[in-house]
Length: 73
Image 1 (cartoon, rainbow, N blue to C red):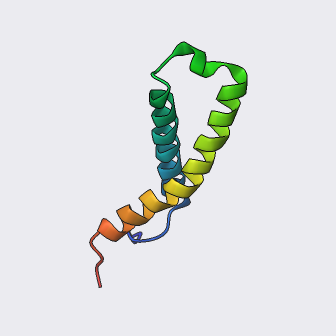
Image 2: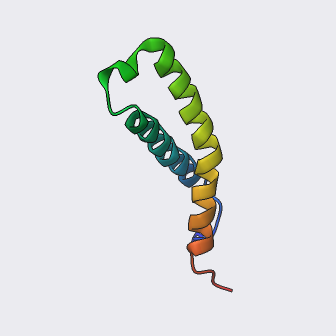
Image 3: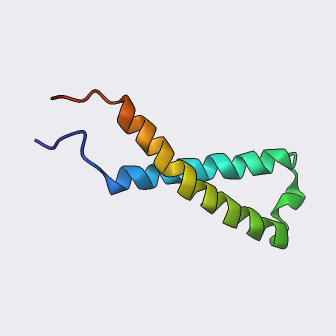
């Protein structure tokens, strides 16, 4: 049986995707959900910032989920 407390790259990747969505929607919301948000120069910067946010926030989400698990000894 596989140990549920094992590191999973897939779960880390999913956490990073969730973090990317949170950062992306947050930046879009700060611009008032306007259509001009998707203008190319600004959109490129937002993509870079949201990916950077996902790289930082994703492992943090994964870590907090790991801490919240019940650890069997």
